[in-house]
Image 1: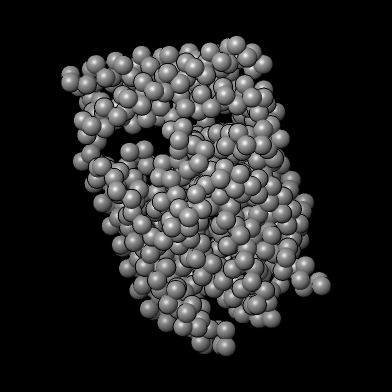
Image 2: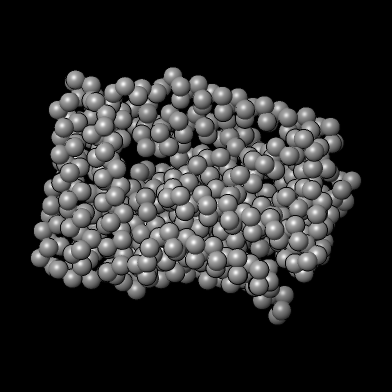
Length: 155
Length: 412
């Protein structure tokens, strides 16, 4: 029984090691650090889209009095930091020529989103500001969704 | 009456301790991305953890030996050592994510700086685990983790199409436009199986059985607690997935932060609902942090033959106590560097699935060994289910890393 268990475990370890090696091979063959490809841009735009959706949700719930001051300010600040990191990624990589226009649109929308998230973190108990932000987030969300869909179509 | 109370508390504790930060993140995101279509994976994973935790509890009650003792005995020192190192690395990562989750919850409640709260969380855990008994820790964090029931009530209040919910408990694969989306779906299948069947739960459960002094007369109790506790716990996981599908999918929001997880509750129950959700998350994450730290210490002590157990005075199990302190400190060092707890948990969930077969294979052999288990040996059903889930988790372990890379950690 003990020998069977050892042999079985060795087999399992070998199989898992194979999986790790396969993963490493896929990673090495798939990495393209030189320029932003469609897939990478689509992922970044998808993340921005989710952040815009959360911004809109936060603004709506804050207007309804369903959130605390701490939650809205911390959540908005964290989203703002995340969107800033995404802007840096978008700025630091050169988009392939055929993607330049879409990458520029992504950067512009990311900039607007970042500004709105900054405003959101200090807008608790300011209904007018929250209403304006809610509408703005909805607009950015719609534009990011369209951009993401067009990137999906490119493959 | 006392026995009934014990069973009831056991079930409630298992239920309250079922969800942790990884499960919260992956369940909500699964619903937010794929609607109800991954519910069958939650059911599959729940059946798997029931099968193996029942075996671990039964083996512990009969042999009075926990999982890692048996792993070393069965597979030898060298092979066992690889499993031990892998298991504890994953435990430390999971513990780091849970500590980060606790600090985020405290930050959302207090507004204090995150890094200070991480340190405060470390202090909190050291005090709680040092001064309180295993029984007290298990019951308090498990039972107060039941505040997470607010997510179940929210899921019902969101009025999902229950026929559609029921249909998705049958294995299915939705139609996607591209092969990449199939890969992302497969990545979530693997991640959900791992999130539900996290290996530390088995180590902790078996060690807990010995801490509580179980013997063969507790085997029925073991079976009832495991089956009912985990089924009720998985209804919490199902509720999270439903909230993802009902509250986040239509908004195109893929929640990444613990704060975002409370928005679905806040939308239904307002500020108080949100505060209860944060309370539930605190106890769920804190309970998991303690379980992972203790589980690591149990693993090392059991493997190396040191005296172990919370029931022993600290001086009599000094190396065991030193081990869980080290785990808390290492986990805190990882998370205080500023690593995002959600990213950490994603890695820990994916690496967990890789060690699942290495943990469960020796357990399956021992539970099926008549010489060791006597009359309590696996029946035909337990053996069939055990081997079936071993194949499932081995396939999941094989696919985990390639899928993580192909899908950029599930992002697309």
